[in-house]
Length: 117
Image 1: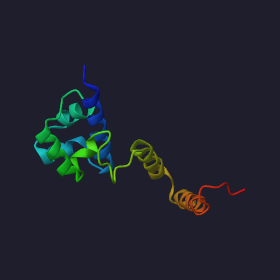
Image 2: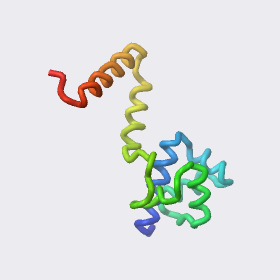
Image 3: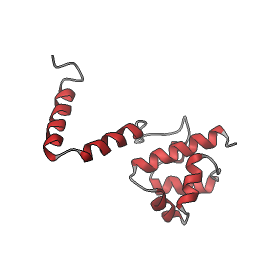
C-alpha cells in the first residue's frame, strides 16, 4: 500500500506535468525514464528518491517544495483538472461559438463576477 505522502507527491507531480503540457513520455524522456515509471511515480506506487525529485523539479521548472503540501507552490494551479476540462471543451467549439464564449467570459470578468441582470 503506497504511503499517503507518496500519493500526494505523485498527485502534485501529475498536476504540474499536465500544467506544463507534457505527456508522461515527454517528461520521462527528459530524465531517461519510461512513461510507465512516471506513471508509477504519479500514482504513488513507486517512491521518488530525493535526487530524482530534484531532477523532476528541474525538468518542470518548479522548486522541490512544490511537490509537498506546505511547499512553495507559486505558479502551480490547484484547479488543473478543471482548467484542462475547460480547454478541452473550448477546443471542440466552432470558431463563432468560441468568439461568443470569450466575449461572455470577458463581460463576466469585467463585472467582477456579479450577475449582469
